[in-house]
Image (cartoon, rainbow, N blue to C red):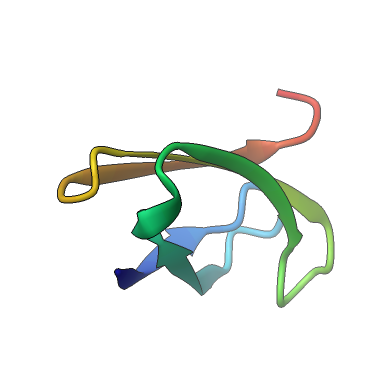
Amino acid sequence: MLETQHYQCPYCGESVQALLDLSGGDQQYIEDCAVCCRPIVFDLRTDGVDWTLDVRTEDD
């Protein structure tokens, strides 16, 4: 249950693509931006079918 999602880096503003694994349920994790290398907090909420992704800086 993998989905791809484009998001905008909260630091540099670049559009980046993430690969999301919906099979793990709700998740919060940190990944570095592929462009500026700063840490982004990913907050993935899913019921296994529908999902939302929120990205923010560590300071938010």
